[in-house]
Every structure is written in C-alpha cells, then in structure tokens.
Length: 225
Ligand code: DC
Image (tube, rainbow, N blue to C red; front, top):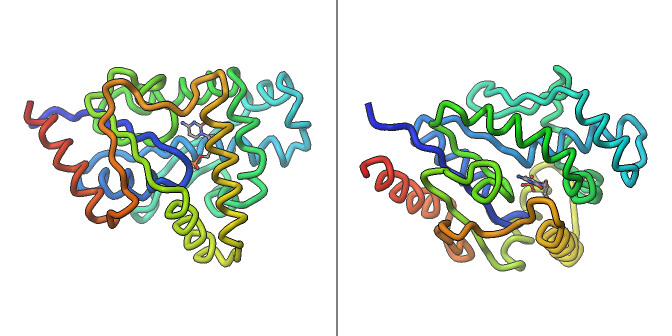
C-alpha cells in the first residue's frame, strides 16, 4: 500500500484550484477539501445573522459557534452549515464582496484552520486554498501554487457564473478578482503567498485535463519517493 500523501494547492482567485484539486483527488482516490467553501459558509452565516462584518469580535464569536462540514454526495463535494446544504448559496457576488473581510480575521482563521488540520490528519488529501502550503499544512509532501493571467481567470469565473445563471460583465469580474487578490495577499493573517518549497504552475494556456495530469505526475513522484 503506497503512502498517502498530503497535497496543498494554493493560488489566487479563479486560478482553477478547486476544479484541479477535485479531479486530482478523484484520480488518486483521495479526499478533496475545499477550504474556500469553509470561509464562504462562515461568511454566509455571518451575513444571515445580520452581524456587522466590521465588528471583528462579534464575527469571531459567531464563527466559533457554527458547524461547517464537507460531505461527498453522489461524487460531488457539498458544504453544510449547521446541517443545511448551502452549496448553492455560497458562490454569489454578495459573498465575494465581503469574504475577504471575514477571512482576514485571525480568530476566524484559527477556528477554520484547526478544522482543516483535523480533516487532513490521516493523509490522503488534496486541500486547496490560499495558505495551505504556508500555514495549514506546512509539512505537506507536495505543494503546488497555481497562477494564471487576470484575463484568463476572469473569463473562467464568468463561465462559472453563467453556469449558475448569473450574467456578469467581464470587466466587472476582472475588477472584483483583482480587488480580492490584493486583499488576500496584503492581509496580515496568513496572506496568499507561495510557500518557499511549492512548485508553481501557470495554467493560463493549459486545459484542466493537462493541469491535473501534470500535478498527478508530481504526486506520483512524491508517493514513489
Ligand atoms: O477559493 P475561493 O475563491 O472559494 O475562496 C474564497 C475566499 O476565501 C478568498 O477570497 C479568501 C478566502 N480564503 C482564505 O482566506 N483562505 C483559504 N484557505 C481559502 C479561502
């Protein structure tokens, strides 16, 4: 039985992390953990509770009390908030608008990072996010940092939104992604940053299939060694 490694995939908004990580996990028979979905569920919960997002203490206290879980149903990962399936509610422009504020709070990160480490305890995981290789799993056996041009990332996000029936202007999406990149990279708590020992992959001109295959080969090298 080969060793089950931990794979960290980080990168900026819409760089293809989630799709790549999900397909890679499937190919390896590993568990896929979408940490962005956890921050999204926490943000939804804060908004629903009517808490002022700038009241850090109230936000942190709220996030400590909620239960977020990830479950695979019919081969698709679903996100649950206090037992309710919120998968369809967490990828909206409203959430994108405020998520960087909620996820910049160290207290919020502490709660979610602890849960993420528990999920990865046994190995055999592909986890995607912003700080997986640097903070959540600094000793992950394989770390990948995905990048792609802003233009291409905006185009991909537009397609994602279209599939959900949401029409958005490309220039608006570009602005929103650039804003989120800036906030995610400049926050003091666990900013978006490439780990020193991460392998960088530029996906601008790659298909999903190609990028999954490249990382799969990197994973096999690690598993064999
Ligand atoms: O990967 P995503 O677009 O679903 O992530 C949504 C937001 O959540 C992102 O803008 C920043 C935050 N996030 C984070 O701070 N740390 C992570 N590990 C994952 C996401």
